Image (cartoon, rainbow, N blue to C red; front, side):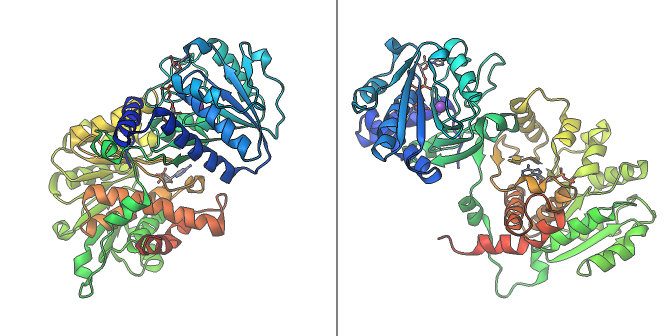
Length: 505
Ligand SMILES: NC(=O)C1=CN([C@@H]2O[C@H](COP(=O)(O)OP(=O)(O)OC[C@H]3O[C@@H](n4cnc5c(N)ncnc54)[C@H](O)[C@@H]3O)[C@@H](O)[C@H]2O)[C@@H](O)CC1
Ligand SMILES: Nc1ncnc2c1ncn2[C@@H]1O[C@H](COP(=O)(O)OP(=O)(O)O)[C@@H](O)[C@H]1O
Ligand SMILES: [K+]
């Protein structure tokens, strides 16, 4: 699913109006109906709803929503905020359509807002994607007052004051919504952790914007949906054999961190790899053989650390490296050898990233390779330097991927996958239960298995990250967020793959 800019969203609205031969008021009615349907689904009928409308089309939506919620039996109070001499045509049209009994309150001073009960709902329709400067003055006072009211805030399209696709200036006030229903496509701002406090839970509600326009609109940003992922999955062939699903090598584990190798190996096997060899330091031999009998185990000459590549390293289809390996000098040398000798696709995680990040010599060896990096934000900063904010991090992600022609799965709540073309795919599965040691090692195992099965590097990243989060979402039902461990995520991989391979409803 594409993510479009605020400017493109405006063009999509205009294009839809023209293509369908409808008026902009008709499209607004459609948007208001979509919002109202979502609101009614989420909250009970008969609730007290205070709708705050700004002077643009977002405010026009708010007026239409007021009318529709009123018709459905909610107790509605609309508010008109700011200078109405500049109100949009569709705002005025919907103001006229308000029924007699819905007398709007004019707000020219935040003091005009009555105290709202904590059980009340606020519909925030002050500003949408047409915001073109930071919110200050009266609007900021209103926003601050609503934020501190304690009532539940539902935003129309986007929390008012939040820029859709660029950094909101410091001085701008922003609504802290509990939930947001956004029209047609997700907005870039929703996917960034710095906006968690503003956006809350968000949902996309379709309003039938021109498919043709969206198809042709250029963008670097995408949200991965289940449908996208199901189209990537390759069925297994009847006469296939293990040789057709790749032989993967994992270089993982170190003294005291053999669990990382076990987790990556178990996840790799649960993700369909044909054959798996794991090389661990000598101290890990019995651990691996006991914990993961399906994997072949090789030992390093070093007792505690990765220090060498296995003999015949060429025979593997993919190598996953990093979880639990530490940053010893001998390990750095081994990583150097891996980058120098190997033409395989490499999945590079954890301390392998840290070692590369700390060495210009290793970084210089990254060109012309088939590489996937799976850093968390700290590891990513070690690679690219300190970042200023989430937009700056995205820019660094794109630049790094374009520079090294590699893929980076930058982990987080919405893991962002960067590609050599400068595209970014945001993931939509996963939950805070995954914020526990070892879940990253699981991801390394999954992606390694998928590359081994001849998925392209881009497909392996997108599918791997999606199924990793999906397994955790399925685990949620039995273990919950607090008790979730990395092993629970592995244990739910079978159900996650099953879920994806079942036909769509
Ligand atoms: N254009 C259309 O046909 C549709 C628009 N829709 C709604 O319209 C919204 C976009 O509407 P608009 O483009 O009118 O924009 P907005 O309603 O977001 O706001 C624009 C108005 O606010 C003013 N403004 C912008 N920033 C300000 C600030 N910081 N302080 C004070 N005033 C400020 C602008 O000068 C303009 O008058 C969407 O988010 C969506 O809610 C939907 O109804 C779907 C259809
Ligand atoms: N709040 C969250 N919501 C969704 N996914 C999360 C959240 N926190 C962490 N994750 C996921 O959990 C994994 C953690 O990886 P990482 O930080 O490398 O852990 P470790 O090094 O302990 O294995 C990543 O895939 C990340 O996307
Ligand atoms: K809004």
